[in-house]
Structure formats: C-alpha cells, structure tokens
Image (cartoon, rainbow, N blue to C red; front, side, top):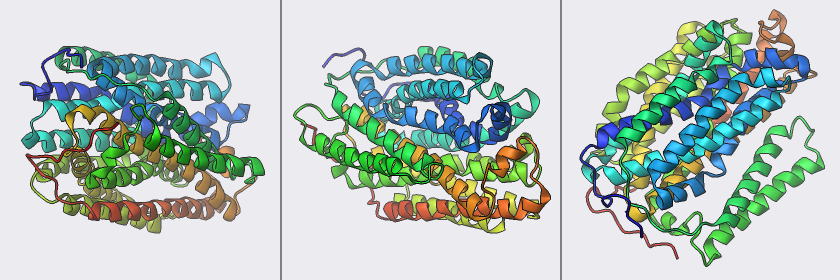
Length: 498
C-alpha cells in the first residue's frame, strides 16, 4: 500500500470537499438529460443531411455508453492513483469535450461528429463519477454519511430533472450549442474548487483486469446498438446476432470475474452483501427511467402542444422543486428509518406518477394534470436516491470503496444507456403502430408543430412509450422492498476479493 495522505479516517472538513465535488458531478449528470429538450433543434440542424430522431437519440446514447463502459475500471483507478487525481483529470477531459460538442456542427455537417464529441464527454464523466461516491465513503464518519449521501443523491436527482429545464432556456435564448458551452465556465470553477478543497486520500495497490474491461464494453455496445437500431433495421439477422453475442459475452464477463486469478474488475464478493446487490438492481431501474423519460415527453410537448423548448423544460419545474425541497428530509431520514420504507415509497410514487402522466397525455391535456404528475414524480424521486445509495455502500469495506462505487455507478449508467436505447426503439415502434411511419412525422416537422390531424396518433405513441417506465420500476420496487436494515456504526466485513 502506498500512502499519499492520512489514512481513510474522516477528514475535519468533509462538507466543503463534498460541495466542491458536487459541482462537477452535477454538470456531468445534467448532460445525461439536457439533450432531450434540444432534440427538435438538433434535428432541425442535421435533418437536411439525413439525420433522424433515432440519430439524435444517439447523441445521448453515445454519452451514456462511453460513460458506462469504463466506469468499473475508473473506480479502481481512483483507489490506485487517488480519487482526487482521477476526478480532476476527468473534469479536464469533460470540459474540453464540451467545447468540441459546441463547435461540432461548424466542423462537420454530419451528426456523427457531435456523437463522437459526446462519447469523449462520456469518458471524462466516467473518470469523475465513481470518485465522488468513494470520497464520501472515506471522508465522512458513519453517523453523518447518510446526510452526505443525501446531498450526493439530491445532486443526482436534481441534475437529472433540471437538465431539460436548463436546456430549454439555453436552446430558446442562445441555440442548442450552448447546452455544451455552458459547461466551460462550470468546469473551470469545479476544477479550482476541487483542487483546493478535496483532500488527497490513501491509495491502494491494485492490478487491473483489462480483459474484463474489454468483455464488459463489447457486451454493452452490442446490446445497446442492437436494441436501439433493431426496429430501424427490421430486426435483421445481423441485429439479432449482435444482441445474442452481447448476451453471451456478458455471461463470459461474469464467468471471468468469478474465475480470474488476478484482482477482478467487479469483485463478486461485494455482492455477498444483500443490500449492495439489491441496491444495484434498484439503481439500474432508476437509471433506465430517468435517462429515457424526457424523450417522449419533450417531443410531445414541443410537437403536439406547440411549446417552446423553455416551456417544455418548465413542465419539469414542479419535479425539480419538490426534489430540492424534500431531499434534506430524505437525507435525515436515511440514517433513522428502515431503507425499505423510504426507497420503497419513493420508487412506488415515481412509478405511479409516470403511469398517471401516460394516462393523461393527449392533444388537449390540461396543463395542471401534467404539472401534477411532475410534482408527484419529484416527491417520489427525493426518497429514491439517498436511501438507495446510502444502503448500497454502508456495509462496504474501505479498501473496496472505489470498486463498490464503480459498480454502483456502472449499473446506474447501464440502466441509463439501455433505457435510452429502449425508449428510442419503443417510440419508433409505436409511431409505426399508430400509422406514423415512413420518414417519421417528427423528422418532417423539424422545429415546428405537427399537423393537427396527427396530434392524436403522435400523443398516443408517446404515451404508450412512457408506460414502459413504471413497468421497469416494478423490478426496482421488489428489490428495495427486500432491503434489510444495515448496521449504522458497525458495518459487516465483506470478504476481500482474491
């Protein structure tokens, strides 16, 4: 073991360090959802060169995929070289990639330049995300870790909700490029704060499972590409083979993690902790939902209701407000109330709100019904992030904090990237089923509203797509209802990996 700082005892100034980390963490999570509200504007820019709605969704999918694939190894790299170094390096990559995203349409008329820049952004985000959670685990005392995780979870939840609102304002006032340019000053401020306030922590020697990285990356890419492009390519034999190969390689990855004689990328011993295993199932479903819900909602709002990007984004304002107001309460309760009660109530409320939203989406839906569903969603999400995250990590040994954070973040991102691919597939399929295939009405409409004659069919297609989300959350609900109460001050030891 190489020591670069005092050991993993709680630091005397953990809250300023956490606040500094949350600046960058907020930024990378905003970029998961900020593109959803800009979909029509980006489509308008690139459609003359053949881009489709599905291509624009790849702008988000590429980011999520590049974020998810290396996140297991970046958690381990943080243990080896120090979470502060990895966080700052990732922040630099993310900020530079944001500049490339903003200028991409000037550099190339093809949307694939923007998609490539978004992939680089995702790599930077992958270096940052596990470090935030690992630092919290290592610098906060056990009795206040729930409150710290609440702030971390609230940052994740609010960022996911605020992304479309901020995106709408920027698209309306300055152009879609500014959803990326805004990251430059935020990245600079985040770098300065983290360099000054985040402590250097003890490092641990690790070997690196590069074969595991390759297997997990290839499996995830094949699955995501196959799911998202399947309907577009008529579920050809090639697409089905890709999905099958992704599943086989995924199984090979798990087998390799169980049998490698070197230190595994994903220590399966961590899953001997029941709460860690269940929380990973739960966060996968939550990532799926929050990464995908914006696409059908924002398209419906702008193309059917005729909302501007700002107006469409503001539909989510009640969700953001409720999440911000209730997050501190959820954080305090996370250290006192059984996690299955908090997380179970939160997941169930989010599922109910999405079912209500889908039920009321029509061309003449009263605004209050949409805003009411969004407020209910924000209420539920407040009690999802903090209890689930705190429960996942409370029993993990310190020397595997980075690995645990990497696995947890990876599963959230796997859920997100599969969610964005699945919603693209379902939207495409439901548009066809409702008689809106053949070039796609959304592509034809570009930045304008759809013809009134197809408003009903388009609304039905978007609503039917949203029904997928509460169905997925039922899996997460079952998982969190099986949580056991974790020890607050005497966490169980988890067997170390070989």
